[in-house]
Length: 97
Image (cartoon, rainbow, N blue to C red; front, side, top):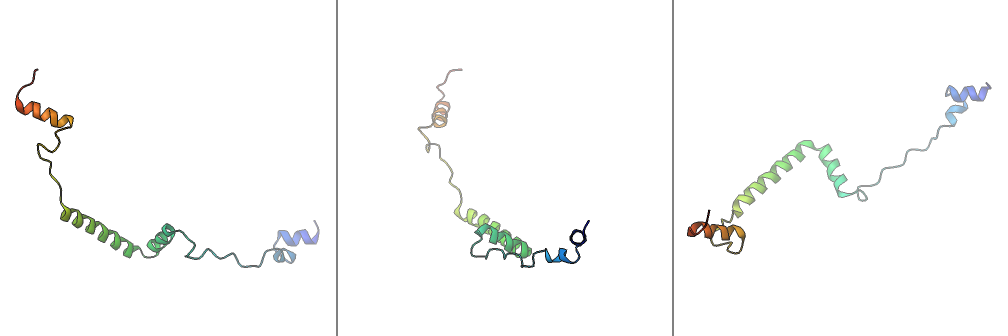
């Protein structure tokens, strides 16, 4: 084994010069990252704010859904469907066993 091989193997002398000294490439800027990556990064760095935002979102959805309400079907609201036809036959009493 010659001296240069020894230096490279033991990270001495020329071996350290063989290691690149340029700094690593910078990560892409926030403007080029997808929106999902930016939101995920923000959520990871601000966990309590992210949890609070989700709680607020769910609360607004529940309150909004309650404010809109529901629509109850009446007996004659579906006369052309099979279930409406079956309901009319059953309430008329004219059906065979």
